[in-house]
Length: 313
View 1 (cartoon, one colour):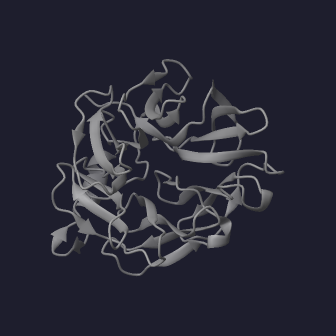
View 2 (cartoon, helix red, strand yellow):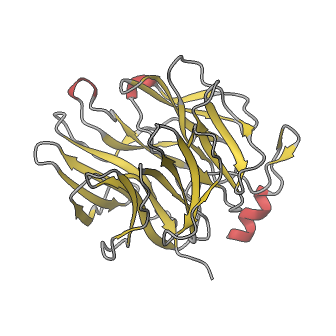
View 3 (cartoon, one colour):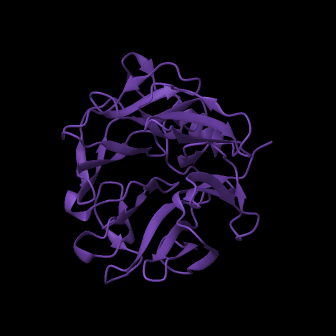
Protein backbone atom coordinates (compact mmCIF):
# COMPACT_ATOMS: atom_id res chain seq x y z
CA UNK A 1 0.00 0.00 0.00
CA UNK A 2 2.74 2.47 0.96
CA UNK A 3 4.80 1.59 -2.13
CA UNK A 4 1.77 2.17 -4.33
CA UNK A 5 1.09 5.50 -2.63
CA UNK A 6 4.71 6.57 -3.01
CA UNK A 7 4.60 5.72 -6.71
CA UNK A 8 1.49 7.83 -7.17
CA UNK A 9 2.92 10.79 -5.27
CA UNK A 10 6.14 10.67 -7.27
CA UNK A 11 4.40 11.71 -10.47
CA UNK A 12 2.51 14.73 -9.08
CA UNK A 13 2.76 18.13 -10.73
CA UNK A 14 5.14 20.90 -9.66
CA UNK A 15 4.82 24.17 -7.77
CA UNK A 16 7.12 26.99 -8.83
CA UNK A 17 9.29 24.47 -10.61
CA UNK A 18 9.68 22.16 -7.60
CA UNK A 19 8.12 18.69 -7.77
CA UNK A 20 5.37 17.76 -5.33
CA UNK A 21 6.79 14.24 -5.21
CA UNK A 22 5.63 12.66 -1.98
CA UNK A 23 4.39 15.96 -0.56
CA UNK A 24 0.65 15.88 0.29
CA UNK A 25 -0.17 16.61 3.92
CA UNK A 26 -2.59 16.35 6.79
CA UNK A 27 -4.85 13.57 5.53
CA UNK A 28 -5.00 10.23 7.32
CA UNK A 29 -3.23 7.71 5.09
CA UNK A 30 -3.66 3.91 5.12
CA UNK A 31 -1.73 2.19 7.92
CA UNK A 32 -2.17 0.14 11.08
CA UNK A 33 -3.69 2.10 13.97
CA UNK A 34 -1.40 3.58 16.60
CA UNK A 35 -1.81 6.15 19.38
CA UNK A 36 -4.10 9.20 19.39
CA UNK A 37 -2.62 12.65 19.96
CA UNK A 38 -4.38 15.82 21.06
CA UNK A 39 -3.78 19.16 22.78
CA UNK A 40 -5.39 19.99 26.13
CA UNK A 41 -5.19 22.71 28.76
CA UNK A 42 -4.97 21.46 32.34
CA UNK A 43 -5.11 25.03 33.66
CA UNK A 44 -1.45 25.85 33.11
CA UNK A 45 -1.49 26.07 29.31
CA UNK A 46 -1.98 23.73 26.36
CA UNK A 47 0.28 20.68 26.03
CA UNK A 48 0.30 17.65 23.73
CA UNK A 49 -0.90 14.29 25.07
CA UNK A 50 -1.10 10.83 23.54
CA UNK A 51 -3.34 7.91 24.46
CA UNK A 52 -3.94 4.38 23.23
CA UNK A 53 -7.19 3.75 21.31
CA UNK A 54 -8.43 1.62 24.23
CA UNK A 55 -8.10 4.60 26.59
CA UNK A 56 -4.99 3.41 28.43
CA UNK A 57 -1.50 4.89 28.80
CA UNK A 58 -2.39 8.60 28.72
CA UNK A 59 0.88 10.54 28.48
CA UNK A 60 1.83 14.20 28.43
CA UNK A 61 4.57 14.45 25.80
CA UNK A 62 5.29 18.20 25.74
CA UNK A 63 6.31 20.48 28.59
CA UNK A 64 6.77 23.79 26.75
CA UNK A 65 6.45 27.09 28.59
CA UNK A 66 3.75 28.97 26.65
CA UNK A 67 1.76 26.12 25.11
CA UNK A 68 1.52 23.59 22.29
CA UNK A 69 -1.33 22.92 19.84
CA UNK A 70 -2.59 21.06 16.76
CA UNK A 71 -0.46 17.88 16.80
CA UNK A 72 0.02 15.92 13.59
CA UNK A 73 1.58 12.47 13.30
CA UNK A 74 4.31 11.62 10.83
CA UNK A 75 3.54 8.75 8.50
CA UNK A 76 5.94 6.37 10.27
CA UNK A 77 4.32 6.98 13.69
CA UNK A 78 7.67 8.10 15.11
CA UNK A 79 7.34 11.90 14.96
CA UNK A 80 4.76 14.55 15.83
CA UNK A 81 4.65 18.08 14.45
CA UNK A 82 2.88 20.84 16.37
CA UNK A 83 2.61 24.59 16.79
CA UNK A 84 4.56 25.94 19.75
CA UNK A 85 3.40 29.21 21.29
CA UNK A 86 5.64 31.84 22.87
CA UNK A 87 5.00 34.30 25.67
CA UNK A 88 5.00 37.27 23.26
CA UNK A 89 2.10 35.77 21.28
CA UNK A 90 4.19 34.41 18.41
CA UNK A 91 4.32 30.75 17.36
CA UNK A 92 6.56 28.39 15.42
CA UNK A 93 6.43 24.94 13.87
CA UNK A 94 8.19 22.25 15.91
CA UNK A 95 8.86 18.57 15.22
CA UNK A 96 9.62 16.06 17.98
CA UNK A 97 9.88 12.34 18.55
CA UNK A 98 6.59 10.71 19.54
CA UNK A 99 7.76 10.45 23.17
CA UNK A 100 8.41 14.21 23.35
CA UNK A 101 12.17 14.06 22.94
CA UNK A 102 14.37 15.92 20.43
CA UNK A 103 12.30 19.05 19.82
CA UNK A 104 13.40 20.89 16.68
CA UNK A 105 12.13 24.36 15.85
CA UNK A 106 11.74 24.55 12.06
CA UNK A 107 10.61 28.10 11.40
CA UNK A 108 11.52 30.70 14.06
CA UNK A 109 9.63 33.38 12.12
CA UNK A 110 7.11 33.90 14.89
CA UNK A 111 4.09 33.51 12.60
CA UNK A 112 3.80 29.79 11.82
CA UNK A 113 1.48 27.15 13.26
CA UNK A 114 -0.78 24.14 12.49
CA UNK A 115 1.84 21.97 10.74
CA UNK A 116 1.08 18.73 8.94
CA UNK A 117 3.44 16.02 7.71
CA UNK A 118 3.41 14.81 4.13
CA UNK A 119 3.28 11.07 3.27
CA UNK A 120 6.98 10.96 2.45
CA UNK A 121 7.72 12.37 5.93
CA UNK A 122 9.99 15.08 4.54
CA UNK A 123 7.63 18.02 3.97
CA UNK A 124 4.96 19.87 5.92
CA UNK A 125 2.05 22.17 5.22
CA UNK A 126 1.42 24.95 7.73
CA UNK A 127 -0.41 28.22 8.36
CA UNK A 128 1.64 31.40 8.29
CA UNK A 129 0.07 34.44 9.98
CA UNK A 130 2.32 36.66 7.90
CA UNK A 131 1.44 39.36 5.38
CA UNK A 132 -0.33 38.26 3.31
CA UNK A 133 -1.61 35.38 5.44
CA UNK A 134 -1.97 31.91 3.91
CA UNK A 135 -1.06 28.24 3.70
CA UNK A 136 2.56 27.33 2.94
CA UNK A 137 4.66 24.25 2.33
CA UNK A 138 8.25 23.53 3.43
CA UNK A 139 10.73 20.69 3.87
CA UNK A 140 10.94 19.03 7.27
CA UNK A 141 14.20 20.88 7.95
CA UNK A 142 12.47 24.25 7.57
CA UNK A 143 13.84 25.11 4.13
CA UNK A 144 12.10 25.56 0.79
CA UNK A 145 9.06 27.60 1.91
CA UNK A 146 6.40 27.93 -0.80
CA UNK A 147 3.06 29.73 -0.69
CA UNK A 148 -0.12 27.85 -1.67
CA UNK A 149 -2.98 30.21 -0.67
CA UNK A 150 -3.41 33.92 0.03
CA UNK A 151 -6.24 34.87 2.36
CA UNK A 152 -8.66 37.49 1.06
CA UNK A 153 -10.46 38.77 4.17
CA UNK A 154 -8.80 41.41 6.42
CA UNK A 155 -7.81 40.22 9.91
CA UNK A 156 -8.85 36.63 9.15
CA UNK A 157 -7.01 33.45 8.12
CA UNK A 158 -6.68 30.28 6.08
CA UNK A 159 -5.98 27.40 8.44
CA UNK A 160 -5.99 23.62 8.95
CA UNK A 161 -4.49 22.49 5.64
CA UNK A 162 -5.10 18.90 4.51
CA UNK A 163 -4.50 17.14 1.25
CA UNK A 164 -6.25 14.21 -0.40
CA UNK A 165 -4.43 10.87 -0.37
CA UNK A 166 -3.93 11.10 -4.14
CA UNK A 167 -2.23 14.48 -3.74
CA UNK A 168 -4.56 16.30 -6.12
CA UNK A 169 -6.64 18.43 -3.74
CA UNK A 170 -5.64 20.64 -0.80
CA UNK A 171 -8.46 21.48 1.60
CA UNK A 172 -8.43 24.19 4.25
CA UNK A 173 -10.71 26.27 6.45
CA UNK A 174 -11.14 29.91 5.38
CA UNK A 175 -12.35 32.34 8.04
CA UNK A 176 -14.58 35.23 6.91
CA UNK A 177 -15.85 36.20 10.38
CA UNK A 178 -14.14 34.39 13.26
CA UNK A 179 -16.53 32.14 15.19
CA UNK A 180 -19.41 32.87 12.83
CA UNK A 181 -18.55 32.40 9.15
CA UNK A 182 -15.99 29.68 8.36
CA UNK A 183 -16.00 27.60 5.16
CA UNK A 184 -14.21 24.52 3.88
CA UNK A 185 -12.40 25.31 0.65
CA UNK A 186 -10.33 23.29 -1.79
CA UNK A 187 -7.49 24.29 -4.09
CA UNK A 188 -5.13 22.54 -6.48
CA UNK A 189 -1.62 21.97 -5.06
CA UNK A 190 -0.22 24.74 -7.27
CA UNK A 191 -2.61 27.26 -5.73
CA UNK A 192 -5.05 27.37 -8.65
CA UNK A 193 -8.78 26.63 -8.91
CA UNK A 194 -9.94 27.68 -5.45
CA UNK A 195 -13.46 26.34 -4.82
CA UNK A 196 -15.85 26.12 -1.89
CA UNK A 197 -16.91 22.69 -0.58
CA UNK A 198 -18.88 23.77 2.51
CA UNK A 199 -20.41 27.28 2.83
CA UNK A 200 -19.43 29.87 5.43
CA UNK A 201 -22.82 29.62 7.13
CA UNK A 202 -21.96 26.07 8.26
CA UNK A 203 -19.22 27.55 10.51
CA UNK A 204 -16.72 24.77 9.93
CA UNK A 205 -14.29 23.95 12.75
CA UNK A 206 -10.55 24.21 12.26
CA UNK A 207 -10.00 20.44 12.54
CA UNK A 208 -11.01 18.30 9.54
CA UNK A 209 -9.56 15.19 7.90
CA UNK A 210 -9.59 13.12 4.71
CA UNK A 211 -10.57 9.45 4.77
CA UNK A 212 -7.67 7.15 3.84
CA UNK A 213 -9.45 6.11 0.62
CA UNK A 214 -9.89 9.75 -0.41
CA UNK A 215 -13.64 9.49 -0.91
CA UNK A 216 -14.86 11.46 2.10
CA UNK A 217 -13.88 14.27 4.46
CA UNK A 218 -14.92 14.56 8.12
CA UNK A 219 -15.70 18.02 9.50
CA UNK A 220 -17.47 19.78 12.38
CA UNK A 221 -20.28 22.25 11.66
CA UNK A 222 -21.49 25.04 14.00
CA UNK A 223 -18.10 24.91 15.67
CA UNK A 224 -18.54 27.90 18.00
CA UNK A 225 -22.20 27.32 18.95
CA UNK A 226 -23.43 30.12 16.62
CA UNK A 227 -26.93 31.30 17.51
CA UNK A 228 -27.24 28.60 20.15
CA UNK A 229 -26.71 25.77 17.65
CA UNK A 230 -24.76 22.71 18.78
CA UNK A 231 -21.59 21.55 17.03
CA UNK A 232 -21.91 18.20 15.24
CA UNK A 233 -19.66 15.85 13.30
CA UNK A 234 -20.46 15.40 9.60
CA UNK A 235 -18.95 13.83 6.51
CA UNK A 236 -19.11 14.87 2.87
CA UNK A 237 -17.87 13.54 -0.43
CA UNK A 238 -14.59 14.85 -1.77
CA UNK A 239 -16.42 17.12 -4.24
CA UNK A 240 -18.43 18.76 -1.44
CA UNK A 241 -21.68 16.90 -2.08
CA UNK A 242 -23.60 14.58 0.22
CA UNK A 243 -23.07 16.26 3.58
CA UNK A 244 -24.26 13.81 6.25
CA UNK A 245 -24.57 14.42 9.98
CA UNK A 246 -23.12 11.65 12.15
CA UNK A 247 -24.06 13.22 15.49
CA UNK A 248 -27.26 15.10 16.34
CA UNK A 249 -26.75 17.32 19.37
CA UNK A 250 -29.14 20.24 19.85
CA UNK A 251 -29.77 23.10 22.25
CA UNK A 252 -26.34 24.73 22.29
CA UNK A 253 -25.10 23.18 25.55
CA UNK A 254 -23.63 19.93 24.21
CA UNK A 255 -21.69 19.22 21.06
CA UNK A 256 -19.43 16.87 19.11
CA UNK A 257 -16.15 17.83 17.42
CA UNK A 258 -14.37 15.81 14.73
CA UNK A 259 -10.80 14.65 15.16
CA UNK A 260 -9.59 12.38 12.37
CA UNK A 261 -10.08 9.06 10.66
CA UNK A 262 -8.13 6.12 12.01
CA UNK A 263 -5.26 5.09 9.73
CA UNK A 264 -7.10 1.88 8.78
CA UNK A 265 -10.19 3.93 7.81
CA UNK A 266 -12.60 2.01 10.07
CA UNK A 267 -13.10 4.69 12.71
CA UNK A 268 -13.49 8.42 13.31
CA UNK A 269 -12.20 9.76 16.63
CA UNK A 270 -14.07 12.73 18.09
CA UNK A 271 -14.83 14.73 21.24
CA UNK A 272 -18.19 15.16 22.98
CA UNK A 273 -18.54 17.98 25.48
CA UNK A 274 -21.26 19.01 27.93
CA UNK A 275 -20.93 22.68 28.84
CA UNK A 276 -23.35 22.48 31.77
CA UNK A 277 -21.44 19.66 33.42
CA UNK A 278 -18.02 20.80 32.15
CA UNK A 279 -17.38 17.21 31.03
CA UNK A 280 -15.45 15.89 28.05
CA UNK A 281 -15.32 12.48 26.43
CA UNK A 282 -13.04 11.07 23.74
CA UNK A 283 -14.92 8.60 21.55
CA UNK A 284 -14.69 6.73 18.28
CA UNK A 285 -17.37 5.65 15.80
CA UNK A 286 -17.60 4.04 12.39
CA UNK A 287 -17.70 6.47 9.45
CA UNK A 288 -21.46 5.92 9.15
CA UNK A 289 -21.97 7.11 12.74
CA UNK A 290 -22.58 3.65 14.21
CA UNK A 291 -20.81 1.74 16.99
CA UNK A 292 -19.94 4.74 19.15
CA UNK A 293 -17.37 3.64 21.69
CA UNK A 294 -15.98 5.54 24.66
CA UNK A 295 -12.20 5.81 24.68
CA UNK A 296 -11.78 7.97 27.78
CA UNK A 297 -13.47 10.52 30.02
CA UNK A 298 -11.15 13.49 30.41
CA UNK A 299 -10.99 16.45 32.82
CA UNK A 300 -10.33 18.87 29.96
CA UNK A 301 -11.25 19.22 26.28
CA UNK A 302 -9.04 17.28 23.83
CA UNK A 303 -8.44 19.54 20.80
CA UNK A 304 -6.79 18.98 17.43
CA UNK A 305 -7.31 15.22 17.81
CA UNK A 306 -5.16 13.19 15.40
CA UNK A 307 -5.04 9.38 15.20
CA UNK A 308 -1.55 8.24 14.30
CA UNK A 309 -0.19 5.11 12.64
CA UNK A 310 1.52 2.30 14.48
CA UNK A 311 5.27 3.02 14.44
CA UNK A 312 7.21 1.29 11.70
CA UNK A 313 10.48 -0.42 12.46
